[in-house]
Image 1 (tube, rainbow, N blue to C red):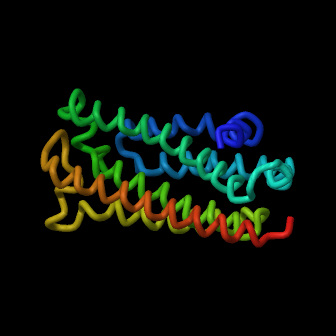
Image 2 (cartoon, rainbow, N blue to C red; image 1 turned 45 degrees about the vertical axis):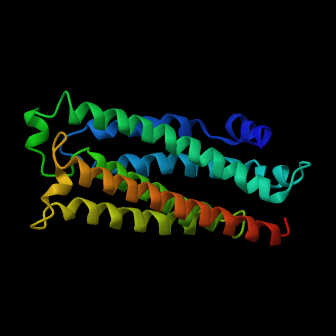
Length: 217
């Protein structure tokens, strides 16, 4: 697994996948839908899949002396590494905004979602959707990219719209808390997002392994 992971990172990955990790810093932007940072990171991953497909990387990987399911697991491992790198930057932004910048007027006057633990949970959910819809969808054919990414894009922006709207509903203002206000509820929502990511990723990976085994490359 270590060797297939290194192959993914050094040979199969597009430079954009690494560059778009920086989109996690969008959690610092006021007056901007911060969850778009998760989408841009996913877009960078899409470019890696596109680059690998054009290089016929899937067939090359399948011809290596490893199980076909390890090809799938290597791809999922690479995706998860990029997601965690992006999430790490998001965590840094959240910590700074919840402590040092919690009184900054530019964030208090922001009508959009604040970068807090709920936003992190939502980012985990969006990455889980990417793993479920796009990565899982890719391994149904091991070739087609456009349709699964289009479906993911629609699902992602609908989800972002819902997450952005929730704190405007009376009684749900807690979702947009500043600093450490209502931290217990915020942490519960973060845990829920992480759980959703784990469930979607594990389910998608297992299903993708089954599908890829059946594909005649």
